[in-house]
Image 1: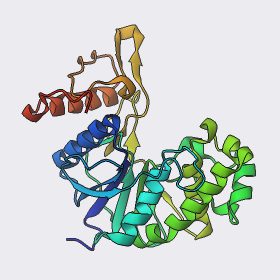
Image 2 (image 1 turned 90 degrees about the vertical axis):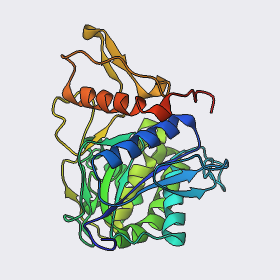
Image 3 (image 1 turned 135 degrees about the vertical axis):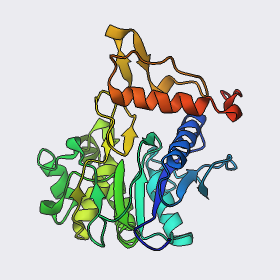
Image 4 (image 1 turned 30 degrees about the vertical axis):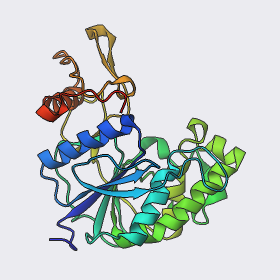
Length: 287
């Protein structure tokens, strides 16, 4: 029931683009298919009216570019929409699962492992704080507590999320507004909000339990609850390729050859199953 760890409020952030709309709808389909306990909440940051969605929607204005500095950084939408949602419509569920829109469920997740002060995160290999000591020490007063944790797959107690979000925003802004820190954050500053989260979490004393929660393309075991399809599925040796960046919704994707890794096959199988639904036999390329 709501208000316990038996249900999880799964939350993700999108803008008003068609590119993120189809990802949101595919995520919703997978959430329903696996029977994921608890609601699915779309944080929609857009100056346009909300589109239909098979879940809950919390609608905010767009926060990109930044309303004060003008910095063009789309992840501002997520952290500022989270702030607004927690303030205006806080969830009844004790546990929140934060994911990216380019995730799908292959199995369900519950919040039993989560307790106050101890979120559960998929380990993020490229968020090792040791090579980023300069960035961490500059933006965190407790650098020894910084962990390779956070988005794109994070189970966290609602009260911890409420506490960390304001500092998460502040840390992200500080990193983005400092040219040296932006460079250190990686990917031309794209990972600023990820470092903002882990620095903020360390400062308030959160200690993450690192658990394998998600797979990515190229892996040959589709045995975890979530697939994060950030990377292209590219297998020139088998004459097959798929990439979310140039996918035309709601087109069927050619089936991958048997030699393609299991995660890619599971993802495309789910996508094609969703596309085959009668309500998707429409053209939304220009929507």
